[in-house]
Amino acid sequence: MFELLSTVYGDAQMAQVFGERRTVEQWLTVEAALARAQAAVGVLDEDDARAIADAARVDDIDLAALWSTAKTVGYPILGLVRQLAARLPDGPDGHVHYGATTQDIMDTALALQLGEAADLLTARVGALGDAVARLVDEHRATLMPGRTHGQQAVPTTFGAHLAPSLTELLRARRRLAAARHDAAVVSLYGAGGTSAALGPQAAEVRRTLAEILGLRAVDVSWHASRDGVVAFAQAATLVAGACARLARNVIDLSRTEIGEVREADGKHRGASSTMPQKANPILAEGIVGMSTVVGALCSSLQRSLEVPQERAAGEWHVEWFALPHLLTQTASALRCTTELVGGLHVDADAMRTNLDADNGLVMAEAYMIALAPALGRELAHDVVYAAARDVRANGQPLVDAVRRRLAADGAEATLDAAIEPADYVGDAVRMCATALDLWTSSTKDRATA
Image 1 (cartoon, helix red, strand yellow):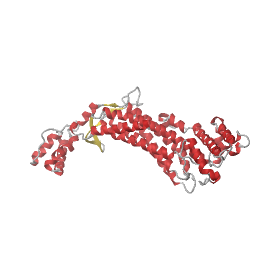
Image 2: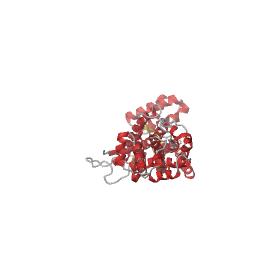
Image 3: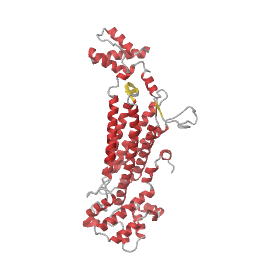
Image 4: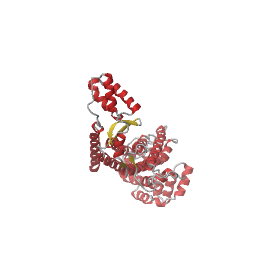
């Protein structure tokens, strides 16, 4: 099947983590580690365990035969175990997969894959955060219109506009770390989650297996409890959402009538097949699309939380499709957003021009607050509201309209001078400094951890 989104915006690194070869290799890694763990506690002979581990090579697996068997069985591990055992002499061949069930192997391998995925996503969140931080720092005092409900609201700075995204990425990195920890758990509980087939040494084997694989061991089965997997997907989905918000703002601010930012230039970049003037925000559009797909896949994974009794009856299968695609699209969204932010052209002159485009209406709240000590907030609101309607009707500057309203109403308040946008950005610059300090300290803490 040809899939256009992944072809144009796919991610080779994350796709490799969940690729055919790597997935089978991880299953074999778990089977080999299980044999070594059982030998370490005396369940298997050391020589048998060594033979099993030596034979667990992905290059020796007939993948076509493996998938053919999986179609019959419904799952891949029986065929994998049979192929592995067939390459062993009498003795060790009877101890492959000893005491385990299919889901033990696949879930433990998934824990390993999620660890790799978390490391990749975390590194990319860091790269994106660094790119955003550079813009926050550079534009902490660059004036622009702040917008609410799609309309100009009050002045802000471009740095302050981006600062919340930087703190989103900070929280995203923390959530990924927590999700990685919660998902890094061995599954070794046997057919019904009781570890009966593993015998009295089940807990010791589980702990040893966890040590070998660099995972954690818990003595309660999670075959049917998929919250750790879903939480991992949710953490990734929030990352994709943060990317989409950045991308959506680029799309909006690069509109022809706004023109405050634009994507990196390049011949035919964002070109139209019929409109020669077009330079569409192609990276931002792709990011929004990928994030939408990620959100839909995460929603489907919620169904895996409904596993009945001790093992799934179809709910588990949702993970097989949704999770690799979700994480691959998230990784791609991060990579594309880092490229988007890193190459972003910021037009400070256009931002300033847009601040002045509405005859000062963007300063309406500032005038209301300036008049409130003398008039009270409600009357000040009424005066400026009426003045704003006058501005829309006749195009006069807001400061003049306010003065006329004050004079007409006989109000005991005056405006000595127009209020400049630069004088009404509140804590915008401080917000930038705070966001940068939080990001920098978090990055340093990770480097020394």
